[in-house]
Image 1 (spheres, rainbow, N blue to C red):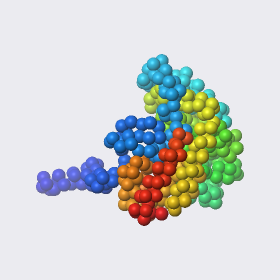
Image 2: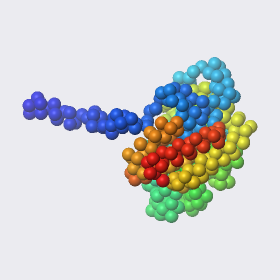
Image 3: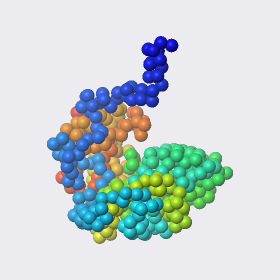
Image 4: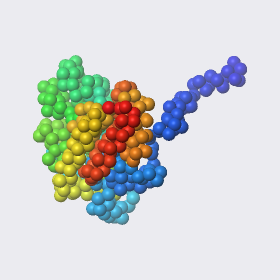
Length: 405
């Protein structure tokens, strides 16, 4: 084999070769339609500045609008100076603070559980919980539209992964029947589905779990702080908190921070403390981030009207978009997707809204079918009616120009 042939063969087998073949994102960058990694220069809660342009932010998960609350910033500042900038170790070793344990007690109470365990991110929470519990011979039964962290946790586990059609309780029953002889079953589901904005039929999931002896993990990333009389999540929303085995929460939404937690029976939480690899082998949540979550819990208790305003804003934007003729799917929460059609249409729609001063998030395959791309919007308790009217006006103008309804 000649030198040229050897070089060609090596290149063909080079794991970097696919990087050079990936051109889709660069093509969108060259056309000015690339919507990702937009650098925010400053933020004022409901509005942001990107490359000198001020936009209304309807692409954030800051549901209660607490990222700039003075009390939250004060508590984070205090923790920063008391504990330093980071824990420099895992929870398992030197990275547990009294703040972590206080937060775990309060989260357990909020979610109606015996105990809770704080992880560094919500993503790591799902990876650690599922991979530790679902061992060889057991099964994860997984809603097809669950968040990627639930899917990745199931794929990382040594048990089997079985998927069922989204929120289809008949399909869930069939999956349970087919796996009735497994050595343990975990049903995993989002509470609020992050790209559709609908709520799981949790009472039926729990009834089926009881019938087949399965356990249930509810990912309440978009539910805690939003659903329920006290913001306790999907279980509280349906009045079934005492029947849910495990509830996961993340702090990057209503809690204006970063991190995650799982709440459930004390003996399960104790087991996870000693077996969840994403907890044991990852640096712990920084002090200022933990203090931020604790401050947000204080505000949730003191200002329940924030949740009422959030729901009023969600209804206002959702019905406004429907009145303009847009398809918002099955949304019933502050997550409101707008169907835009194919990928090309979606990128152009996103860009024109951006130029009109509105920031949204495009959702593309594989998250959705190629013909059902969408722009995901979400509202905050701190959006004003005037801001939402400007969002609706921008959607109306761009929709007319592009013929999207």
